[in-house]
Amino acid sequence: MMLAQMPQGLNPLTPEQSRQFAELAGSLDPIQQAWISGYLAASAQGAAAAVPVVAPAAEPATLTILYGSQTGNAKHVATDLEVAAKARGLDVRLVNMADYKPSQLKNEKFLTIVVSTYGEGEPPEPAEKLHAFLASKKAPKLDGVQVAVLGLGDSSYEFFCQTAIDFEARLTALGASVLMERALLDVDFDDHAPDWIGTALDRFEPELKAKAQAEPTNVVAMPGLAQTAGATSQYSRKTPFSAEVSVVQKITGRDSSRDVRHVEISLEGSDLTYQPGDSLGLFFQNDPVEVEALLALLGLDGDAEVIVAGAAKSLRTALIEDLELTQSYPAFIEKYAAATDNSALLDLARNKQALRDYLGERQIFDVLREHPGALEPQALVDALRRMQPRLYSIASSQAEVEDEVHLTVGVVEWNAFDRAHFGGCSGHLGRRAGEGDRLRVFVESNDAFRLPADPNTPVIMIGPGTGIAPFRAFLQERDAHGSEGRNWLFFGNPNFTQDFLYQVELQGYLKSGLLDRLDVAFSRDQAEKIYVQDRILERGAEVFKWIEEGAHLYVCGDANRMAKDVHSALVEVVRRQGNMEADSAEEYLANLRDARRYQRDVY
Image (cartoon, rainbow, N blue to C red; front, top):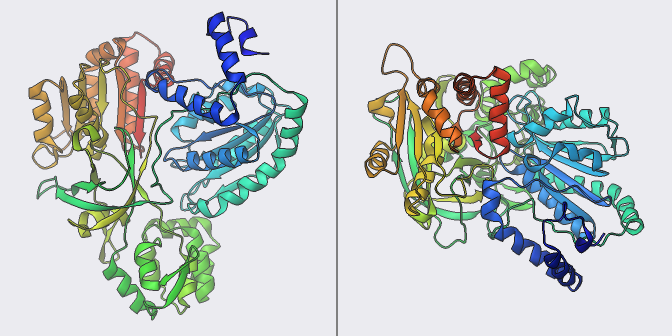
């Protein structure tokens, strides 16, 4: 059916616009069509930020790629799959699960799922709705649907790639047929995803092309309407920018139980841009002192040449810059035990629960100290996995800081086995990095955590601890652009005198009127602990009033406890103030999430 012939109920254009568009579309070659598509998507970006775009149903000969991503990895792999499919001349549709209407599943014929697993086997937030729908009675029969599933995860967690396993099981239970064996990839997914992509497309391609020839359509495809168009940088996770550190400043008090650092990094000389809500990815360095001690313990020459990802370098450089020595994981024990013929570790590797308990208390450094063994330099490198970047919510707006990016970093530190331990990246930033040092960085876009497109929309921000980071960026952005929307911040930490992060700035925003309300909860300043969720309940009537008046809700911080407690508090506020049952209050908040008015950046 030609676009101009569509029933007016399905076609939002006027008859004259439809005729003009059909004439233009018919005269364009594929490259011109793609340019027009990107232009229209970019023009619609402001509206898309306010009202989520629901992806249209697929054509019969379309390969639909659904991705669910918490940190961006699944999105990147799904995008690589899209690019590879287009290079073969296939019609492909890439859709964030958060933008996908579950009822469309019954119309799919060729489907790929690329999804990460979060926490203890849980789906990432954008995948939650579709994940739940597939387990519900509303899920349709999917006979005739061909599916391939790719899961991303971290084998240091017990429920490795559980979400991908769930998706495949539920799709097949509904009648879908698995076109190829699912792949469950660890943090080194970059090494293995291309092979899976190639094999998957080999399986899909013949029937897709046969369908395309048998069922031609004159409807002009508009890829990108379900995505946000934007400028791309030459720097990315695969090609990070070498940025200079300009400031590392402790912003908690001398007697604080927490060490939080404000970090400023120069992006001068790069083309990197970011928006409030985005994250900065960092490749850190392992402690050179610890690396030298490790080399001595294992009797290895730091100058020995090894190969990492196809590149030759010294063992010392590889251990400092390229390999993971802090986060421990089962595959290392298995490989290292085999390389050193360590019977104790070989036995441990056979008992999964005992192995997880053992690794839960130890870094790679600890394992090597307890079990030093003789092995070749390359064997050590091969036992270790490559360093994975760490993501930090950006704590600045480029409208305010221009060629800089700011972070709020809580240093992870603890004592175990008679020595101090530090998190890999936070230890580097908080203990070793200084002015003039360089870090490899990239920007990780987060379209699921954005200020409202309308600057007059009120916002409620809930960010205890380092969760304040993106809200500092939000406030800077609204201040720089003179936004009129009301702003309310909930912030919490242990002590007022030691842990009030960015206190002077926040009080300045209160004084200027940019920040309409600031509610704080310092949990240990009184006998009974008070948290942000308690403040939300205390201010319940006003919180609900703001929401009913159109406010957007944002939560940032710890996922395991804080985010769950805050959600429970919000459910209770809605239940009380809206005179609802608990189920109705949950549905109320779910509708806010669907409308992008309740957004979370939790970790």
